[in-house]
Length: 173
Image 1 (spheres, one colour):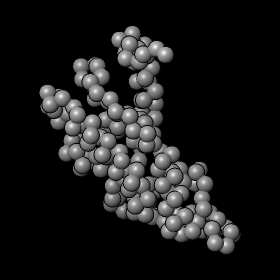
Image 2 (image 1 turned 180 degrees about the horizontal axis):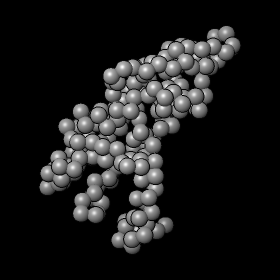
Image 3 (image 1 turned 135 degrees about the vertical axis):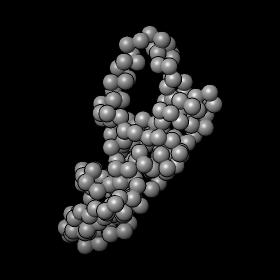
Image 4 (image 1 turned 90 degrees about the vertical axis):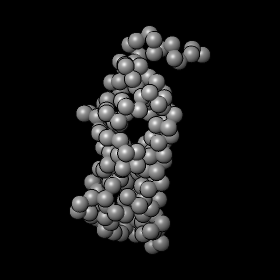
């Protein structure tokens, strides 16, 4: 996470929570609730198809195929987006708390910028339905998803590396 003002980085914070932690949370949830073992790819598909960080107008459902942990045989269960929100609760709380932490550390003179411009979400996790609404609700700030969240982080890093002033931030080892 970064607070950027006038083209410069004011504050950064790193949180090692990403889409794969969300996938692991879904896998763990299905193990505990349904005794169903699924793989990472299936968890990713569930997250994309019905995952959400904020209640949906109409909850979504999906059939999930996996291996029954008791019998060892293939089995199908039907789950809904509300269950996936429950599975993702801990991971989403970590993200929201990290955003709140960096906002609390942000210099007060940038408050008007934050109120006007808000927060921009980038990266694959930003595509989770309702994450912008959840963070907006928790921070009382406008939140939007970057135009191309999947590549915006890489493109931003590339631009940063083109400028010497940013390279000086990282000491050579």
